Structure formats: C-alpha cells, structure tokens
Length: 80
Image: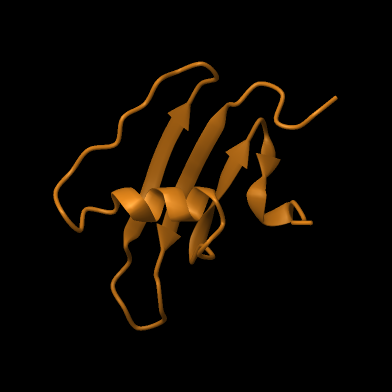
C-alpha cells in the first residue's frame, strides 16, 4: 500500500518562523482537511499563504505543533 492512501491533512497548533527572533509567519494554526475536500487559501499579502505550503512540504521546520497526513506525523517521517 502506498502512503498517503486517503489524504486527510491535520494542522495541530502549527507555528512556523523563518528565523529565530522573527515574528511567526504561522501562529497556532489549527485546521482539519478531510480527504477529497477542495480547499482554497486566500488572504492579504504577508498573511501566511505561502508559509502554509512551505510547512506542509517541509521546506521550513515548524517551531511548534504538528502536521499529520493520514494520521502520520510529518516530523517523524524520514525523507529519502
């Protein structure tokens, strides 16, 4: 079986900073996206839209919180 098999995404108290000492780009984000849902992210310039995707794709490490896909914590999944 391939992972992810469903596609449920859960952001749990996610906080992300680009560097220590900067304000968080994402601050305590809680959102559950069920498999098959279509989601749009909208907001002003600097609202954190791109930061959400960077956190999801693990381009930047989280300061706090966790992201789960199909119940698997992204922090615990090794990248190969």
